[in-house]
Length: 117
Image (cartoon, rainbow, N blue to C red; front, side, top):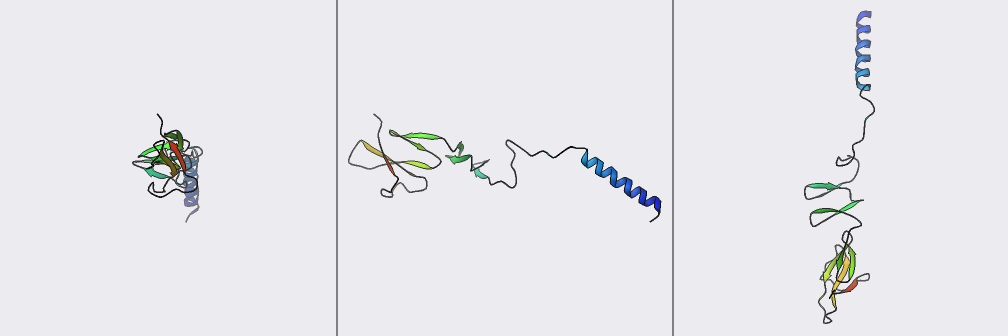
């Protein structure tokens, strides 16, 4: 290559570098955009961060969300409200760990809840 070609190549490289750098620093996506290296799960047609939310009845809800189960309150991301078939009418619900079948017998940590009248 002639010296003129070297100068042209260096000039082109400098132009490309200056164009690439003139756009400013890259900005990380926030809000609804996903980061590729973070773990995300799907709930229906939506993505969510399992460290902040959970999927409950095809809806994304915060981990702190709770509901009533008779006279008890349960955290819907971690527990479930099960009907209890008992001869005592006041004991009609049991709060169990999520994923545990409601048909299973009593487990340590289950909470028996009365019906609200």
